Image (cartoon, rainbow, N blue to C red; front, side, top):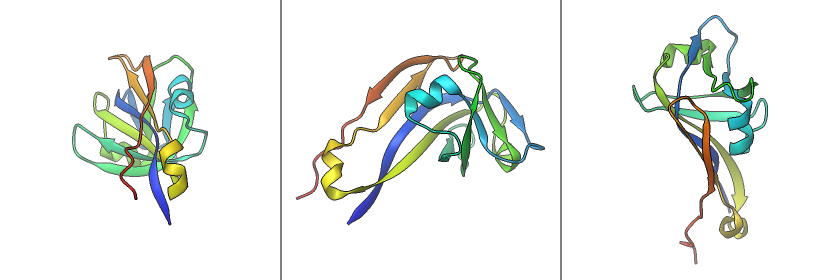
Length: 127
C-alpha cells in the first residue's frame, strides 16, 4: 500500500503580496523553497491560518533572501498581505519507506527569513 505523507512544509510564513492578475502559482523566496525541499513548479497545498482557506497551486521561486511570499492568480482571492500560511508538499511512499522518511519543517521569523529547518520523524504506528 502507498500513502501520501508530508514531504516538507514552510510554517507560519506571512503573505507579502497578492496578484490576482497573475496567471497562477505562489511565489516563494528561493531560500525557503530549498530549505523545505520544494522544486520549481511542484504542487503545493496552502493552509491560510488567518482566514481558514485551503488551496492547491504550484510553487515558483522568488528572489533568494527576499522573504517574498506572493499569492498569484486565483489564490490571491483567498489571502492578502499579512495573512499567515502553512505551505506544504506531499510525497507518495510505500509503507516500507515510512520509517526512513523525515519531512522537512521550515521555521521563519516575522520577515519570512529562514530561522531553522528540522527533520520530523514519523512515529512507527504500523505493524
